[in-house]
Length: 194
Image (tube, rainbow, N blue to C red; front, side, top):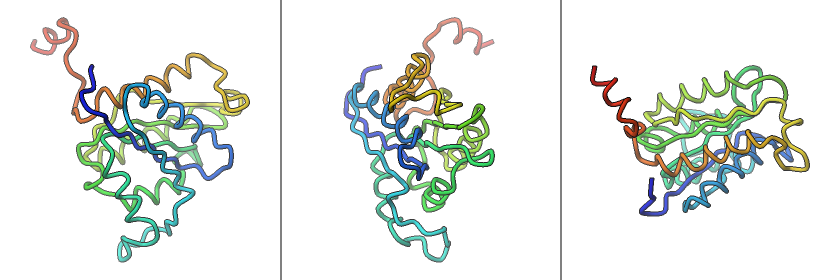
């Protein structure tokens, strides 16, 4: 799919840890999006002043800046480490300060990292939140289990995982602004007509 104008991809990083694997994986996805012709912005939630969300104070701290950066996006990647079977509270707070104005009709990609087994619940929970905000969530997603073994000196040790992350970055650009994958296989079109 050709990109006729430069898409803008924003990644929200929900990790607060120095040397975060989540942040590194998001950087790799953004690098792939840039190679596809997009502009990018990594929003490190740990660097923002975002108090626990209070519906009476929706513009607290850096919330207006956060919303402005997300609104500028054609596509958003939500990235989080897994904590207690779900996504991290800094990302939850950032999403609480956001809404339909930031996400409706936006293509969203998901990336989750775990120190142990597959962080599938994180991806499921983020998919539910993004859909509730009327975003279109890519079917392709990235789960990174056993993160300490998947990275060495900041580099991925598995080619297959690197390919999945690159695919996430490129598919965000390719499917920016669409609500579903286009029909590319004539057999699929025939089957769906039956």
